[in-house]
Amino acid sequence: MPELPEVEITVRDLKKKVLNRTFIDVWTDAPKLIKKPRNFQSFKKEIINKKIKEISRRGKNIIFELSRGKILLIHQKLTGHLLFGKWKRENNIWVASPGPLSDKMNSFIHVVFLLDNEKQLALSDLRKFAKIELWDKDEFLESDEFRNIGLDPLSPNFSFLNFKKLIKKNREIKKLLMDQKLIAGIGNIYSSEILFDAMIHPLKKGMALSDMEIRRLYQSTRKILRKGLELGGASISDYRRINGERGKFDKYRKVYRKEGNPCPRCGTPIKKIIVGGRSAYFCPKCQKL
Image (cartoon, rainbow, N blue to C red; front, side, top):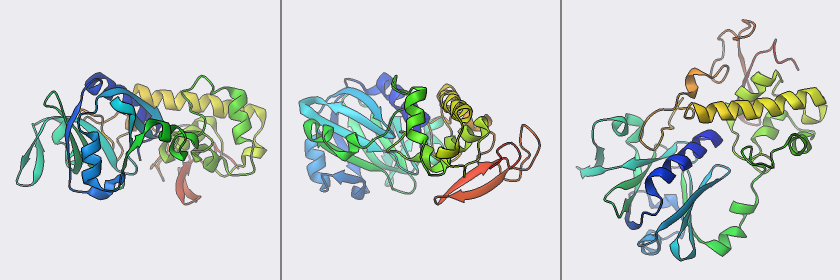
């Protein structure tokens, strides 16, 4: 699933390409992706002729502020990613020109927004788990989708003291880092990399962390997320940038999906355990419980 760096990069890239553009049509072969309104024809009628005034991120949600008081929310979920370019419909398949957009992972196109400059904004989603919603802005600002999102690590409010308050709880630190109601945007990849960098075992309880460990964890959170942004995100699986290119964080990651490989610090084989139904990768020597 795209995490904070991938979603933030998507937003930054979209701002360069689709701000002030207007939706003139929309196509889908998977209407179940449209969650609000449930009826695709109603969604289509409402989205046409709406201009994109602003684009932002709320946790892992991409938020398009549109004209006439509308909000378009897209959550890419497990395997979804947005793409920008131009496709042709051939034999019931959307075909891109040769280049990054023609990457196999960019070919699972299930929603296409046509823009007023003859370009397209498309959603490629192998598993079809993504979510698209169209809201009235006032209603959206009062919704759980907007309000029940935790502290954002890129926000000026992401201070050490605020971070410490959030994780001083009697739960495993891996779960705390991934709880979207506490800290927004961190998922499986970056939580494993953050905990390795901070030398903290994923099963250690937040309440049991010393001030020194919390300080290390705070610094590692900022460091690893910034590195993810700098390198264009992680394309270990499905994620691609809006031009179809892969991110480069994969070359930097130390433990995620590295089970059995030697720890880059001490050489001990990396282990994998399940925490709260999710995989956690760690070095049993560097990250002692």
